[in-house]
Length: 292
Length: 271
Image (spheres, chains in turn blue, yellow):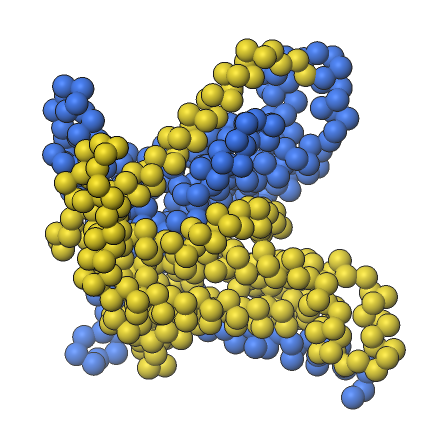
């Protein structure tokens, strides 16, 4: 083969197998979802009629969509600060030579590797009214139980607790990696100066962990739009849409109501949110590297 | 830094307390699974141990079939990911071809929007291909993985060019260089990527739920969701047993290879 063309030919040949599947299951569906969002559902074998922005007008007036978006935000802002603080705390603790460190680290990390469905099955029993573990403990202390998942005020927080439990250990490992990579001379200097542990953490460790925190916060934020498996077991979006999250609403629209056109609109909304978040993360990280 | 013995003890205790709190739900599931249903919330250390819940769970739902489906789907996905991502990563790391940069930024898109969010159109595609309710249909959307391409490309780039050059001088073609030089030098990345990919797909739920509708294709997560749903009225001791059974392979693997797991997730996260 002419060596002038060889690198182009080899490059493309090596990339082609992956390219086929990238296009088929990532790029084509992105374009197709946008396209479908401008059409109504086809009926009786007729081609789907073009309706312009009508589906989007429906979206703006759909109270369940707004409820789901609001729930997503509550879910994100309720879980992320707790998860991230706990992750940092866990990492700082596990990074020291404490007795039984491997065991403690395993306890923190184990929820991460379990499937959300299995976790939901376990927690379901905690929340079950009357016979569940929580009610059992409450009764033991003389309080009456409550229907944790059946009450619109407590259902979403119940799901949030599970998310915190599952994710804290996962984000811990990123802090652990960052802590182990901290410059040794800074730590030595802190020791010599006799800085208090908390003071040292606040003034030295915490700022040095900032890039990790940015990474973790954005990942947690993106996750809240991706992980909805526990809803299938625990609440199915109810009661009264109290636990309706965007991706779950998309699932219902597409595979329970079979409204493909509106599902395409919801897909577009979710894509827009995820892309915005990813670009924002990119911008923040890029800006930070300038003055480091 | 100065740490008093007193505070050190307090911190160790707090770390342990949080650890116990974090392990509690799982310990509780173990308790319920190994005791008769009457003892599910009745913590009596003299309660009789039993395996009856496991037997009951195993015979109530086709767990064996679910396991086989999950193993097939997970193996297929990870194996195909290895092949496709290795070839693509090699192209990006070692060849300078026309259009490479544009294509690379297009792949970036998949790090933001994953096939999981594109399930509506992907379902239609699978219908067109006649693959609905088949195991390949669960795997195919994931086999071209941007994450895998990035991870491997990063690693291939660190392989000294002199090694590839030496192989070329000896007359090795591009694929031979890949297999004899790049792949063997990236073993630890393959291990990390493999562990992350296997545990991710073992736990995957939404897409398998949508694309499967029979016992012969359903993976364990989907089977477990049907088994555990409250409408079925199966009691908690049996649900716990079923749940523990389905997470057992991963849980045991994790406890045995804890260090590799933690390092893999760490490595995979820090790109």
